[in-house]
Length: 517
Image (tube, rainbow, N blue to C red; front, side, top):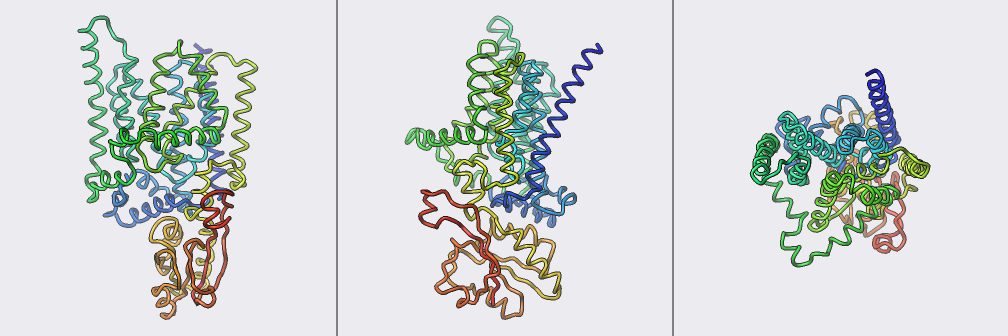
């Protein structure tokens, strides 16, 4: 008994060390401020600020067809962190660590191997794919977390026929529904865990067994859809289905053009996993599939369902496909890859594990210290580092304006920004939110002259600024002749040579910070 307790405590101690190490990797990335605020991060954090200030707007994300749980979760963190972006990104750190624990217990429940479970948690802890999305203020880490626990609790419900596990499955599924629409995949895949039920011989017994499972999981769906219907309290509940038309092809698409964008998107997914997995993860998963399918047929079959059903349907029907849209299939892949280490580690497996950890830590080091040199999938680098969606310079602009205000608090300040939401102006508003005397207004795109609203602000005696990306600025004359004084410019990451943007917009996007004179 003592030996058993020591062995159990030993594994829990190792898991705790892995958790601390995983938290350190993610926190180091956040606190280094290497990654500029991304467009959707700015929107989500700004929504959370508005929802905190105006209780009547607690369902504000519904106006854009988004579920609000992530934003609700950010609100308490504003009291813990003065930087609103860190508050938002910390939510993903917490959900990422919760995912890691779920991966450990899911792997152990499937394969009854603590060694494989610990390796699975290590793979997730250091994988750049996980570290990246567990340290940005986006909803995808939270969705992934709920997906893991839905699968785990569903599995436990079937194994032990316990209604409390069925209820926990319902709460996890409900949380997923309140986070993001792809939660529907989890609801559809729950019955896949029924393969683990102990079926008695005879058709009649199998039918009775199936009926018992249906009734056992009835509370799961009642709780989940009950939680989802909380969203009906928001006046824009209908936008959830209305906005989906902007992102999805109709059902008939599979008949009209079944392989486009299916094949390109699947190829892109492999690229993401190869670069950010990083590379060894995919071969390990394939090797596990080939080697262990006979030993664990049900387990591997269920994992493959949770991997490929969401991936293939999404690749077939979504109009825009980025890495974060498939992040919730990453944990099942990690669990599958860890199966290679189910037995005692030999020299080859030990070398492979060390290579994976070393390669991952190198990429994570670059992501945390010199992000522009880190390996990025092409489509992801564009969005997070190169284009208007990357918020380079926003914190610096905020600090300049804040210092200006502190030195002259009686002076009202007006800041005009390109667009009306997104990286700008939301990226500035999340920082300037605490100063009611500073007003941030959107002034549109493709400016050829100083907008009238900014001219009027200047004439009224306000300190007036304009913040805009160079690709959105089309002045007919020089800035000085137009009435703009350049305070500073903030270059973004260099564009990839040969890209469409490189040829049309130049090698580098810049954020311009002007004073209206």
